[in-house]
Amino acid sequence: MSIDAIRAPFLMEGAIRHAIHRLKYGNLRAIAPILGGLLADYMSSEGLSGDALVPVPLHPKREHQRGYNQAKLLARESGKLLDIAVDSRLLTRVSNAPPQARSQSSIDRKANVRDSFSCQNPSRIEGRTLILLDDVCTTGATLDACATALKEAGAARVYGVTLAREA
Image (cartoon, rainbow, N blue to C red):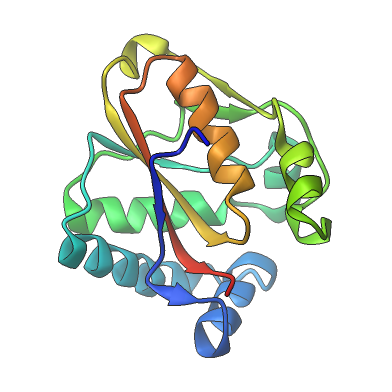
């Protein structure tokens, strides 16, 4: 794996599951400050820091359909509270693979996102410690694919932080 570590404060169940689904699929963007605050509190209490927060990108077509990227909303809110820069232009999604939620196995998930991400502006990546931010981690395949692209562009360390993880 390319990613150095993946951390999440919650399991994907109960109220957190409901809140994430409302943010992601129900267009409830107003909940982003609350969820971003929970992420910021967790990162602060755990001493998790880096040079920049990098939200996991959606393919432009999917972002256009949804109207926003939930990871970007969470990163903006967390970044403000932590006083860490958010750089949503370092990483782009270059293939429009099916949503990971439709993939059943970890092998399928890994294949689904292989070579799906590309780095922009490698000069802003070289030697930096970056924190990938996303809403949910199931197998870590998406975060690892992002970390691979960032490390190939010169990142020293890449950590993944998500609001929740599957049990």
